Amino acid sequence: MDFLFHLLPPELSLQFSTIISFITLIFYLVECFSGYRLIRSWISLLGFLLGVIGGFKLCTIFFDQTSYAVLGAIILGTLLSALSYKVYLAGIFCIAAYNVFQICLTILPLEAEFLYLSSLLLGLFAGYLGGKYMRPAIIIITAFHGGIMAADLLSLFLTLPAQLTTLTCGLFIGTIGSVFQFLRSKK
Image (cartoon, rainbow, N blue to C red):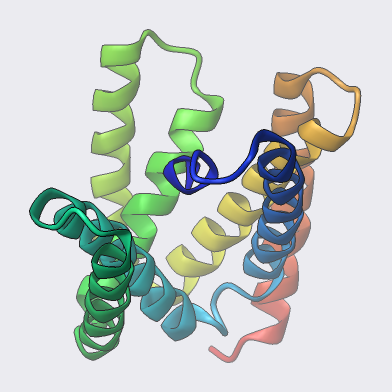
């Protein structure tokens, strides 16, 4: 998203980044408390976002006009959204792997090369578990991903240290979210 903010004047970029951060915080909280019920929507949304980013990047390589890049982003985003919904288990794998990868990048205190490698391996393992034990794995992964990422964004709005907020609040919110999801979802 940062590449879009460079197109805006600096004062609008700051306002939009605050608004986007708040909307993202809401999405993370919804994921924390309703991730299993909304998994098909998350899969389609992830496919759309990957398509938009990929389409925009590809079109900026081949075309000089921004309008072509935006059109390519929308077309590829729509195609990947429809495709990801059709290939459900692959979408489950991708969502679980991406969520755990992002959690690890946020909370693991490792050097860069070890951080990315360990995050990737843990993400792939979580993707495997998501496909094998779908309901409990998706509930736990979405609850803790939503909780930890929401807590990480809360550190932008609160004056607490970022790591303290992310670890304590994220684990607390994730635990409440996972209990809530287990109680609400059918077996």
